[in-house]
Image (cartoon, rainbow, N blue to C red; front, side):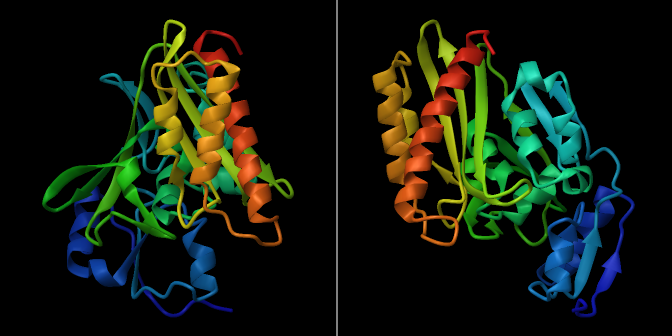
Length: 289
């Protein structure tokens, strides 16, 4: 099948891109790496009148540390995160999750920003950003605004971005004695997740000061396990506290039975992965591997 006919624009600057979206936003679709959009176009699941290709815009790619945050440019490719050796110490969940994404072809061409804007409930980055309590920076002709990750994902393939906005970067807060882990179950290498769990913890001495837990592929969007997170705040990471958080996270999951497994099976995988992820994250935050 061939895509339906569409106009194509490749702006040379961010200002030009947002001007195009101001004029054509409702009928336009933004393309970054194209690894999500192109298949949708070919299958005619998406039929925009205009494709705005921002893949060559300058200054929207790369990872840098700035003002107590990690700045991940929207056009940063998955492989750039996966291969960034500094991130293995600064924020190990990022390269760990990147390694799980699809296959080398997708990781070399796909972008972090394109993936989160696609908002696939089976996508990996959404849960990671929920666990990290990241901020999404969007630009339009009226200026810049910041959207919390918890408010960004609104449903399957639906985000809080307006039609006239472009995602420019993701800001991840950095804290001392913090680390995370990403665990994923897939039927074969490169498949979408049957279940995946992102976990991030910040330690204060021997206690968990803050925890973040994001769930993949067990709801109509990436889910934040808020009750599980709250249950860990101020607690020592004992087996009992971790088991209770895992139970609460499993209860927050909303899986559906399909060829990958029953709803009960998927909830139990959430429970196991939260336990596993918390133990790994705590050990990393304390300086172990």
